[in-house]
Image (cartoon, rainbow, N blue to C red; front, side):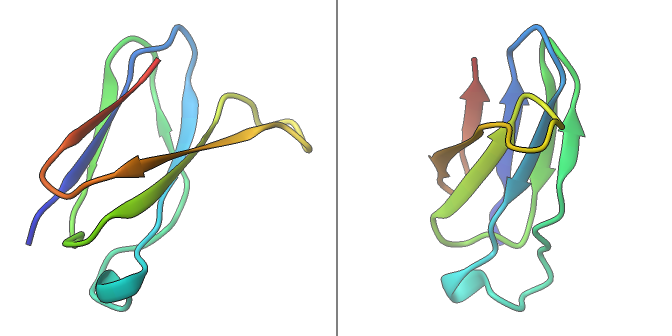
Length: 80
């Protein structure tokens, strides 16, 4: 089973969620939101064998923009 790593290269904490859809649905991964600290904070999502959508936000304010990028198992996604 591959993993997908997300690294925060910004100057502020971000909140990240990675989908577990398609062939990864119900395989042990979750879609909870996690905080990635500034300047290189990262986390790894396991149980991902298919492309997944990475959602992240730079604010916890209601109505804040949620940005979306594509993640591939076995890769690192850098957020700037």
